[in-house]
Image (tube, rainbow, N blue to C red; front, side, top):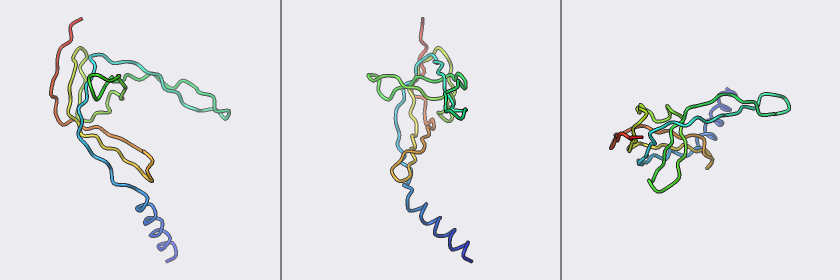
Length: 120
């Protein structure tokens, strides 16, 4: 019985701390080429960074006049990147936070507005 009460109190505390996800639609501009980024992982007791892997990433921006930032290649659900094309996408963007601290984001393709071949 005490365990059930404790579980209910813990569940209530967690529920009261979390905020509902923020959901919005946004435009994303996707560059015609991928870039490779390196990530690191702390694996030794001395916390020295060790290379983990190289990852292909999309170059995206929210506005054509701003700087590019990166997203993992499969981070936009429902979107399949094809090299050599510049894209303009309409996506659903969801941010999740607990106690005002950002803990996650997701993108879901709603519509491909433009897919333009880029000539070298």
